[in-house]
Image 1 (tube, rainbow, N blue to C red):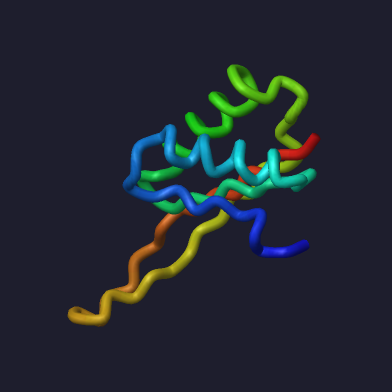
Image 2: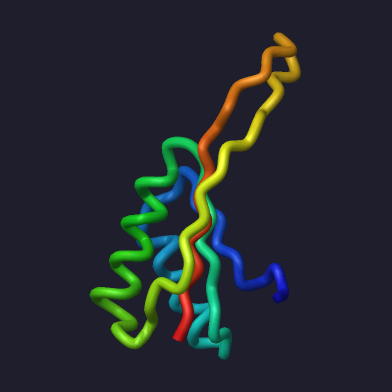
Length: 91
């Protein structure tokens, strides 16, 4: 699957990511993956709920993947674990 169907959730407002998902589905994508790490996970869940409940009721959650990524701090050299989540949406 092409990586153009991925929405990376970060610090922007929730509706920015909702609009990105809607745009991908309008452009003909049958699947969109919403990815988030750390504190943005709850925002990614909000994005998916808004897309599936309010805008595109025919779109369903197909798969949810959770993982832990190890991130190394460049200045201190310490390694910390960061939770990550992928939510796959499809028609």
